[in-house]
Length: 88
Length: 253
Image (cartoon, rainbow over all chains, first blue to last red; front, side):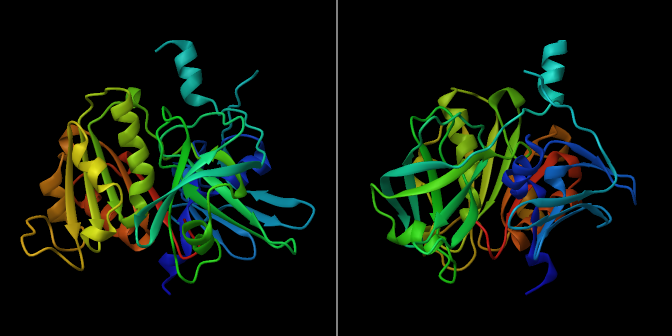
């Protein structure tokens, strides 16, 4: 199996991200802390293994790590995230 | 742009997510490997074409398996439909695309995913590129376009192993104002006059529209297919930002 076959689009994590952040996240822009490029979360690369890792589609630097434990998600975010959440 | 419209575009919708138990209303064979499940979903909040749902199956011993599947139906359709291809070594798809019967229940959550979506008001021209079952979310877009009576220019390039592997064939040929092109990579009818190889820059240039027309592009399929198609599109001058992709991998859809 090639490495390419192991990653999907960040868009595929939409359900998990709603569970963690309580909002639709795939359209949120993220500025990579390494290369500075801005890409929508949904356009990132998603790797699923023991945990879930979202990587910058340009340079591959980590944008988000989620470890899912029996009773909680442990979340680490990197780079600049801009969230605008609609008010009720 | 109106302030409300700007907010609508920029802000993310707060969406508490919960699992819903759905009931299979109808099962439709699409190909020997794939079936459409038409579902009864209590309190379905509605969706946008291109979105997916997460499906969760729970075994009697409590073991759970979860996968994402694209929504095949248009937002305007009465019922939610998923088309699922059976992966013989899969954990979830052999059940959903093989054993499930009307009346059976399982859980879904969603709709989710705002990145790979299209509404008629997003405009066009639209270029949809599908590899195999990657057609599913793109079909939701074409059904939405048809339901809205939209005349947005739309082209679909579909890559499949053989004609027998193509989902929704009759419906595709009946779509109004959509130019549908096929490439068959493994097996072709004797009188075949479509493309006969994996998607490449030459096919994409032929299908169009040109980069100068600024098309909105959606590519969905297996990871290697999406890579190849997206690279070819970029080589033709399309902006990487105008190309939305949805890959499915070994554990996928």
